[in-house]
Image (cartoon, rainbow, N blue to C red; front, side):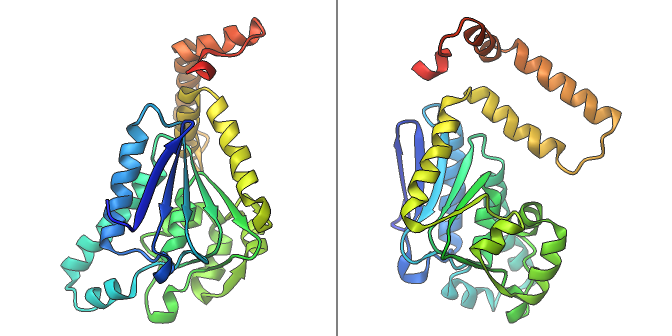
Length: 261
């Protein structure tokens, strides 16, 4: 692992830190590969119950690294497809990580960085942060990040901010649903810790299945097939060891076994 990414685990919580403040935590092919590897490994680690994605310096992530963009300028179409595929794989790995993820946004988020925030399950932003989908200003489109960003902010807001490349505030990001909370800088860690506390105190299996449930059900037609899938999902979780333990501990007014892990 290079110095571009720092990873630590404490008290069942993994922290992934973007550590390139000198380039506003912009990513390149190396950072993309490291993020893919990190979220794959942490997603499989039984000691990890939650993951916080954060960054060093004044910006959370400025999107693509300029040196990387200079190399891409000479790519053929096939090379661009291969390159974009790696970014798409990284974002999907983050979005589908079986562990719950929180973006701790301490600074500005631009272009591809918007995809990182949107792919996380939750996002808490400092009130001074600004957001921007700047791609059209340089003749590009936010295609690879669009599945996650549109899910996060909704199509109506995406129509505006994809097309205008306007810079908008954390308050606006909250209003359109792109982030869940906006707080002063001195309250950022406390709010992230509160969410982490809720996640690690819940059933690990139930949290994992709830994350999958949201992804499966969101924006689907309420069809007989979907209803059957939700019926099977609750039956599976009720019949699981953690499901049985959770109900029994509730009825017996004691703490569930997973809190002692």
